[in-house]
Length: 282
Length: 202
Image (tube, rainbow over all chains, first blue to last red; front, top):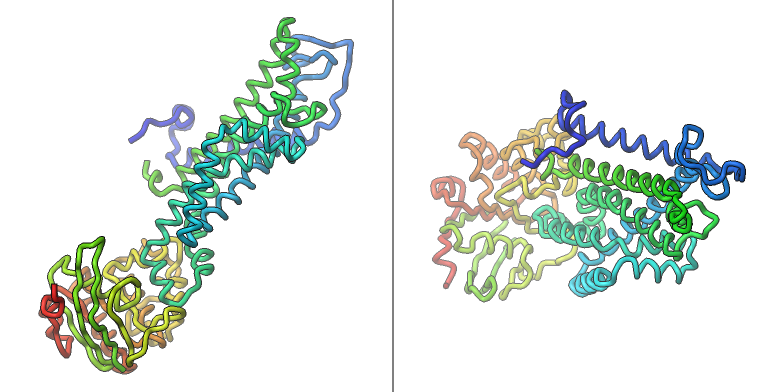
């Protein structure tokens, strides 16, 4: 039996593991939803040159930047933008993965084509691919979402392809075939319900990657445009002020990004344990 | 009607398993087939019911090739019913994938109404096997290949299930090929018993 993760110890030890897992998912989900909703409600962050470059205090808990803007609000806004991009990218990449997995199952030639495509995309460094696609699609949120989606379907496709292949050799699919059901019917009725949980978990696990990559391409200048307060923009702008001792410009947004990524990872892992029957007994 | 398999030859990765197997089955007949484990009985069953396509020889009904598309008139009942059902389907959907049998047929096979809303892993092997037999006796079925369908059932259930199946098949002119290790069972239910070693020329 594997070691309990840190978030399943201590405070809630009176609950059973299933309840704890559900609680973890609910709490982390709540935090993310709150961040997202707060972020969408922040539309106007006032500039105030009287309070520029202030270190963290109780008035401005994350400090202020060189234009006197409150870094806490900018961080939250940036995180909600990251969540939107992550959501778009992971949903699109799961759709691509599902379609390719079904294509691979339909015949031998398509299967080797899909395997070849997987190897091809897996062999290109992610960040390079994301930069190229993002530039080609004109940067901005759309470019970043597409870039992340088109570079992150690989792992899920591999898993789904194997899963579909295994289901296709099962006796109930063979029997369904002999009951005169069409391939499409079998894919829709037999296979899809069985791989739905995998798709769901796969989507959630792409989320943290999507957010990290969005920030890194934006940081490098190939992603969102500078007027959008994305975390990547905040971090890259702060670079020029770090030498002046304004550590809070990079520290808090970076930490917040890390925490959001971690929260998504926790949801993904816990959901996987709930839905995957092989891990359900742990 | 006659199901006839002629000169069936098949090998797994160059390891020959069936050679020149010929057998025929009439609609009003119950033929037993007995043989050792691993001798290729199940492979022959799968060939007869169209689950394995790339064999040599031919399987015909009334001298005609069997249409691959649509409902296959030769239905195989597997040994392990739990593997033949999608674990995410309720039993009602499992049954209706083939057809919607009338209530009296459900009663003959002892299907209880409250089983319909359960998942396959909530029923026992014997209960599941009743479903898979009922699925196989669709009105379009002409022949049934029963591959050790009662090995995991207790004696009472075995009798019940075989009796119901045989009565239905006699009434509807469906031929049965019963494969088993249990020679006593085959002696009781079959019109004729074949020995697999005698028809397989390997």
